[in-house]
Length: 336
Image (cartoon, rainbow, N blue to C red; front, side, top):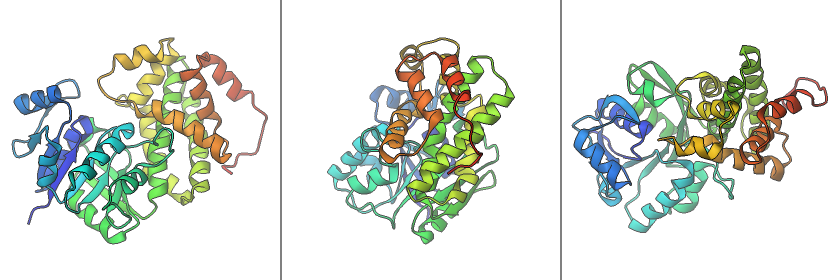
């Protein structure tokens, strides 16, 4: 029997993953919260700004009614922006739907609470727990997944049997899913790398070269790993798909919204103007606030994150931020 899946969030990633699951033989409902966006998708079955050239399969049920989407599903795939996850989870709880299995695809850390996505889900939805909550992460731009370009990701759940089940559901000839039980490391790698991607964009906007990008990726991974290990993650997770794999991709890709924001900043544009002109969300901007607070709260050194925060929110000149990073006291190359 085909799995019944509700994809919650119809941005580029939501559309891409809905099509993927449909092609894998699942019965898919795609929920879009915005009425105008829903009307566009239901009428045109494509979104020319978010995912141009990609049609939504005629077999996918598109709805603006969350309850309707949930009624048709045994699995819920959360593809909403990090800072909206709690709101959607609260509405799911209010609707008192039956027990579901939950898969998170968002990448970030909640402002204020500093919770990872799976933690928000478990704290907000009464049926959410370690047995039925998972996160999928890795280098997976929607633009490429939608065009069936070879992609590999990792699904993390404390419940190994659940992770194996999700490997079966999501994998196909162009989308390969590995498994992990380190959901802490997988989520932190996927979320915190967006801050480093902004930094990578800033250096590109300033006209710097490959040496700088290589340094940012390497030292960015060091501070992500420091935070992850402090919070209980396996350091080897950050050498995998949700760590260095996703970090490299997001720092160098033309598809990266976070790199795009950084590049505009490096060229002298203001954050509010950049965000106002974007159709989709750059998760790294909000995650930068959370990551800086995590660094302070837990006493974990994250110098790149600190400088990105000052550039984004305190109007520090980008070139000055780079100079301050380069001029710090010399040290041994270790991640601890």
